[in-house]
Every structure is written in structure tokens, then in C-alpha cells.
Amino acid sequence: MIQRLDQLSAGQTARVLGFNEQLGCRSQLLAMGLIPGARLKVSRLAPLGDPMQLELGNSSLSLRRSEAAMIRVERLP
Image (tube, rainbow, N blue to C red; front, side):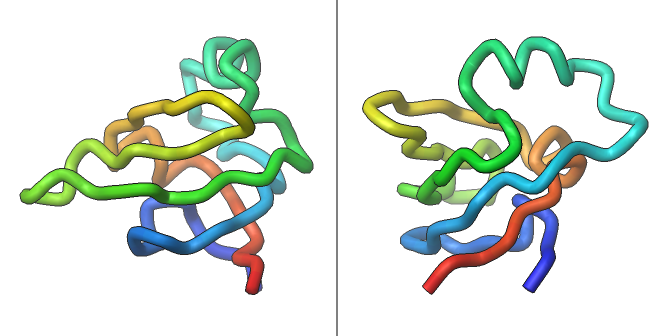
């Protein structure tokens, strides 16, 4: 099921499929490991929902909801 990253809840895992055309920070996200095919887990959300913390391999990454909305993912079981 294809979704945007910002639609996932804490504890869910997903695989990165690609980016929205309007994403200006694409190269920075690629450099941090958010490449197509990468598996990630939403570890937690801030109390007001922004930012969200992701586990990506052995790294932890925080993204704003607006940035996460530009990333297409496939939710994994």
C-alpha cells in the first residue's frame, strides 16, 4: 500500500519508494540514507505530531511533517 511517510504512526515500518517532485531537500535526504528501497521505522512522534523520529539502519533521523509528506513509502507488516 503506497502512502506518504507523514501518514504512518509510531511503531510502523515502511520501505521508501521515492520523493515528490517538489521536494527541495532531496539530496540531503538521500545523503542521510533515505534512498529508494531503504527500510525505516517510525520510532516516535512529538506530542504535537511534529517532528517525527525515524530509525533508519543504525541511525536515528528526525523529520518535519512537511518534509515527510513529500516522501512516498510502502507500509510493511
